[in-house]
Structure formats: C-alpha cells, structure tokens
Length: 125
Image 1 (tube, rainbow, N blue to C red):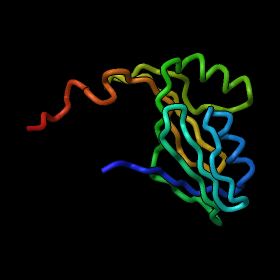
Image 2 (image 1 turned 30 degrees about the horizontal axis):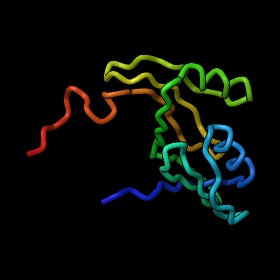
Image 3 (image 1 turned 120 degrees about the vertical axis):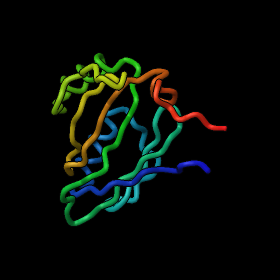
Image 4 (image 1 turned 60 degrees about the vertical axis):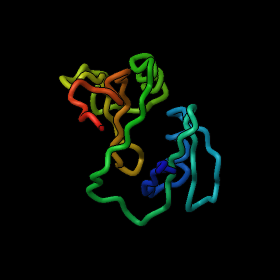
C-alpha cells in the first residue's frame, strides 16, 4: 500500500495556492477555482479543494524540513504567521505550528531518524 495524497478544504483558492507555493510545494494540477495538487521536493503529493467552510479541522498536516529554523524565518519574512516558533518537543521532534488560509492546522518539523524509528516504535515480526 502507498499513500497517494492528502486533500484538505480551502475557502479562498488563490490564497491557499499562494500559501502552499510559499511553503515550497510545486503546483502540478490547477483546476481553478476548485482543486489544486502540489508535489513536495521528494515527490509526495498534497491537494486542496474548494469548500464552503472549514470548521473545527481535526487533521494536522505535517511537513518535515531539515533546515526548520531557517525555513520558518524565511517564511515569516514573507508574512506567514506562526502559532509557535520551532521548539524541541519531548518526543524528539523540533516543531513549529501554523494555519493555512482556511484554518487547517499545519506542523513544520524536523525529526530525523525519530520520524520513522522513534525509541518507542513497535517491533514488527
């Protein structure tokens, strides 16, 4: 099994497209004004689709970035506001939190080896 993409709602197509492009995603599908798909530098895909409202979003989108602090500073310089600055968390990840224009929560983080192989990982036989 392979995860193809994650799709979240947007309420302002142009603002959301601009936001995700600023994050560093490359737009690969433009079905304006209802749908856009993006690709990360490592080939994963992420998409947005137009909805009437995004209320109480419960899904958090995580994007891993090796040079997290530098990326957060660069994004802040473009006007993107963060809810929290890069912080070392007790689970071994460094995280910064923000919201996209529709209010979807995002976490930019760096975990290194702890992303796939944390000390508490369940062994598979």
